[in-house]
Length: 76
Image (cartoon, rainbow, N blue to C red; front, side, top):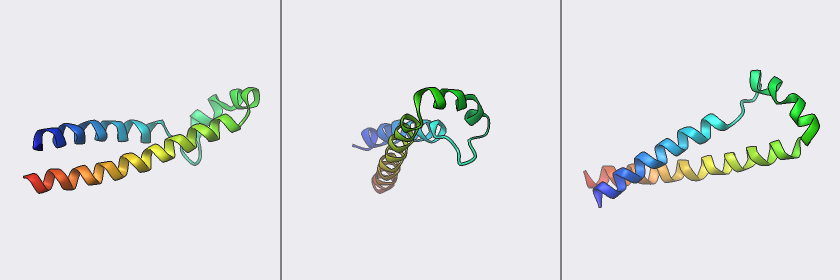
């Protein structure tokens, strides 16, 4: 059980890092200037939809991360 929880913790940690890095920042910086032309062409709704999915995934992965961390700590 401990090994399964530890492996799941590593997978969730990597997924959480990836999801956080995929999110656009508040100021958007260079990524905002690159995708600026695409937003005019494709519309802004698509960008908001992707950001919403990434935000929900971050919340779910964060909860899983804390639950698995407590589980691994309990079995040690």
